[in-house]
Every structure is written in C-alpha cells, then in structure tokens.
Length: 269
Image (cartoon, rainbow, N blue to C red; front, side, top):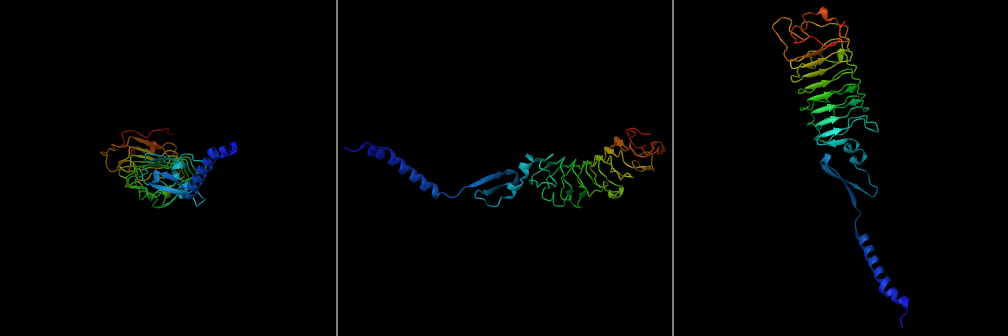
C-alpha cells in the first residue's frame, strides 16, 4: 500500500513545482523593461532606463511637469522651487505666463524656437537685463508684459505688438530710445508708469492708451502728443493719457493736448 505522504506529493506538490519552474524560465527570458514617458508637449516619446541609467532632459526638469501646459498655453506662476530663468517651452506655445518668479535675465535664445508666441507675461520677476534680439524671432507676438521688474533699458520690440506693459521698473530715458515705439504701427496700449523717465518717447499714431504717470517728466512740447504746426489735426485713436505724478504743470502747456479728445486723467497740481 502506497503511503499517504507519497500520494500527496505526487498529486499536489509535484504539479505546483513544475509550474513554478516554467514561470521562472519565462521571467529570465524576458528583457529588462523600459518606462516610456509620453511628453506630448515635446512632440516625442522619451524613454528612460529603469536600471539606473542617465536620466533624460525631460526627467530632470520637464517644463510641463514643473508648470502647467494646456492647449498652447504654459502657466509657470510662482513656481517652487524658485524659477530663475525662462523655462524651455514646447514649440507650439502661444501664451506664456511666468509671473511672480525669480527670473533675472532674458537671453537671446530663450524664445528662439517658439515663433508661435502671441503673449508673454513675465510680470513680478527680478529681470534687470534683456539681451538684444531676445524678441526678434517672434513675428506673432502681440502682448508683452514686463511690469514689476528691474529694467533700466528696453531692447528692440517686435513690430506687431499691440500691448506693452513695463510699469514699475527703473526705466531711464537714456535706456529707452526716442523712436523705440515709432515703428510699432499696431501698438494700442502702452504702460510706462512708475519709472524714472525724464522725457516722453515718440508715440505712434495707433495708440489708444498711454500711461506715463509717476516718472520724472518735467516738460513736454506742442508736438509730444499733437502736431504743433496745425490746429486741424485730431488724434482720433488716443482716448486716455496719464501724466500725473510727474513734476509737470499742465497749465504751462495749453496747446500740448489740443488734438486730444480729452485731457490727461489723474490728479495734477
């Protein structure tokens, strides 16, 4: 008579051992797996080895994990850890919001590969320098906001700008060329308040609004806003001017605003 323990081994344990051995051979035959990171914002599939290889660029600081990327818009506002430079952008980016960070400088190559940009908002950073040509490859840029930074001068601006805001900087007249805005034939909204300007730059005919309050402007001429040699000229587009907070007495310049539809707004002495 066959012992009971032999029967148990034959009918229960033996099939289990055979099955486990087969699984082990199958696992050994498989090649090490790779983890695939789909980065649709970069337009490629990026592979990273799971066996301790060098991490990919997207793995180190991928913009669309550090920030929020959504339908052509990149939101990098008040990023932690501190963001001290303009992030690498997906090529299809149209709108960049990178406010309230610690960005100190704009480099020429920061926007070199994002010709689709239409709006850039870098308000509330620590920007003190913008390299020449930083915006030269942005033919579609319509809105540029650089308010609340530390700029003392401006670079050449894109020709299709509609809105430019550089309020609350340290802009000086020698750092803003007299014709800096002259060729911006689509510029409608210009904000240069709370700076250190001593003169009004040339203002294109396209302007609707211009804010120059809280500067050091002490004098204007009959041609600053109007054409001094004719009383028939009407500046039809411009409907809002701010000059308050400057060492300027409007009463001493009665003909300087004759072409405007309304006098400058704000409080004046």
